View 1: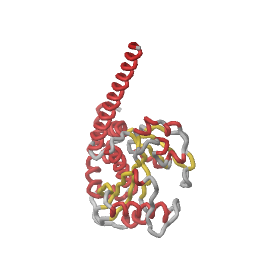
View 2: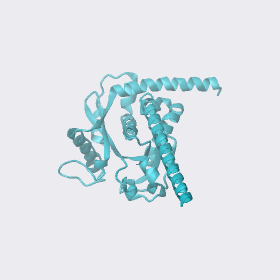
View 3: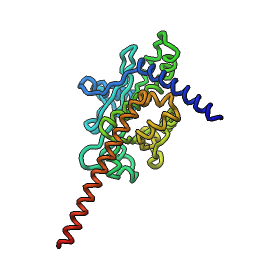
View 4: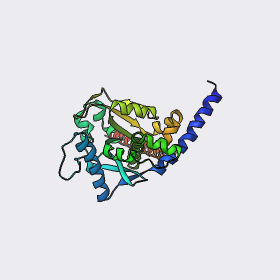
Length: 284
């Protein structure tokens, strides 16, 4: 294929991606859960998906699925605009406290050396508790209102685009807390789906394992800026949804710049301490 043809094909995908993202934003809305009511919605969606439909966790009378990591997390909800239904939710667990060996759920179930590296863990969040209850998804799929061509494409693959929306929410929440990388423990098929939509540059953290009674899961590490940047060239039609027309890529660039500046400052402080110790030794 000639360079001109590659350029033309990429541009077509790019403008197609702009259209898809604009349509996505007209069909879905994403909200960070802050209020008590929002968090109750989050926990109810999780109870439906994890306790009622899949039996991953025991049901309870409150119909809310909550664990000890929620107090160190940020949560988002994706809504289906035409009906106002809360379609799904996701959280990012953030670094907290001083015990970096116990920041994240994955550290309780897997023993990869990467997961016990202090610097790495302080620069990661964990994407967790992604939930799209089938009962709500099926209810929405029954709505056959008049859609444009692009809206039909979005709603026809509802689960796929909802996952893309929740992934966008995850990486944005991580960046809003100045964390440039995410750990994700996912089914291999979901990782393959992310690969197809432009999240290709990931670090595999060991072998896939049976995880917490939910089936085979593969832990990966994702650098947000790398995937947001390279994905725009590899898969612009879907990467533009994940980055919300480059908005999240710009945020990731700023977070990476802040991280590098902070590391440079810390290295300078370490150098000063070393110089002071050297001078003290000379005086003695």
